[in-house]
Length: 244
Image (cartoon, rainbow, N blue to C red; front, side, top):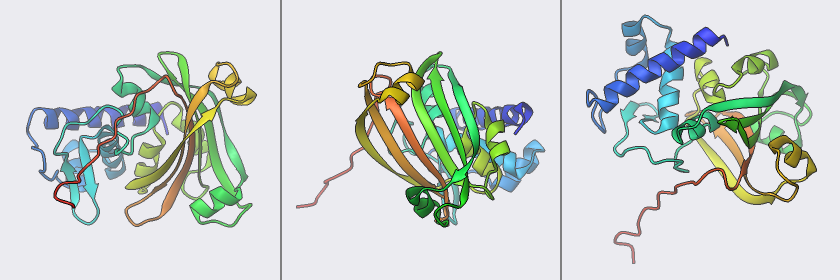
């Protein structure tokens, strides 16, 4: 993915975001279809899909399988765990500049857990991208992403650079509809301490997540080690309403 294509995604997302904020599209209103929006802007459908994915990460819109894309009813909450945001969006939402260091990419045999998550045989080669995400230059998250080679190859992962892997999947017709994450406290071992530039034993919050398309196809397995003092997360808790 070239820098030009990343720039186009961001430009399209900025235009759509502005139209939502200005009230052109109201909460609960369905956006025009991706092909229609793409024709209006004279861009490819994949670029428009990637831009809408960015807005979904930011909480401005939500996709409903078989129905369309709708403007969210409530403003996006900072670091809302109910939203399937990417690390870049999380960092940017805090007014910080996202970046990446220590980036490596390639293929490796799928472990038992990764193979089960991606629905491939154990030991089958899968693409892997490892990088440390930075916020204003500070190392804050160590991320490893695995996906099927036929979804995104290792060279394509390399081209993502500091961008969103969600947007890259969306460009390939594999937009992430939902993910299930397991959160657990952890402590940095010597390896993670070196990568995050913190002492061994530093408190971390670990996310293990599987992301799927609207059709239930698993497309991404991620493990993220967050510095516990770097972010504050929000959880929307509904109910109990009239329940006894």
